[in-house]
Length: 161
Image (cartoon, rainbow, N blue to C red; front, side):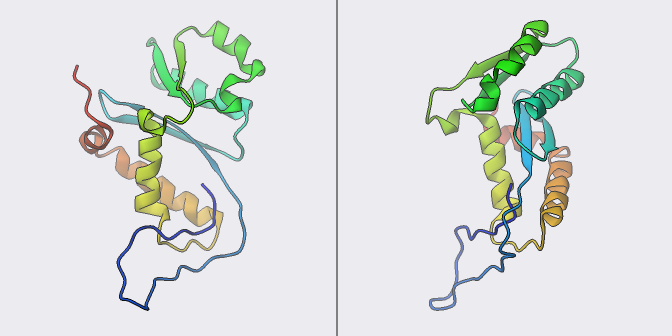
């Protein structure tokens, strides 16, 4: 998430378009996330950068969250997901099953739907004076998500068990 502001779809009177202040900076924070569609449980971590090392830290968080389970991750083809530095780690942890989507298939990844929801509810049409304010807003949204697994399932498409 970046600290520049964006205007989403909104209604306004003709000639009175909504304006959102901006700081003129473009700092960013990286979010890694996963959704368990069958339960609505989410795991979200934040990092300063999107690197193979920070992605591996996220994988470790997933393993700790779901011990003794196989974790199936549906991923896009970002370079960090395919990094050679990850290969030894993935070989040591066969319980991590990484599946890669074909290019240009954003609707097949539940986490992308979660990010869209986050942008709609937190980022769009809102002024944040700095990156820390965005982080606090994201943390509140993440806390909210832990209380509504049924809504997560509904928004992401309930999976029959």
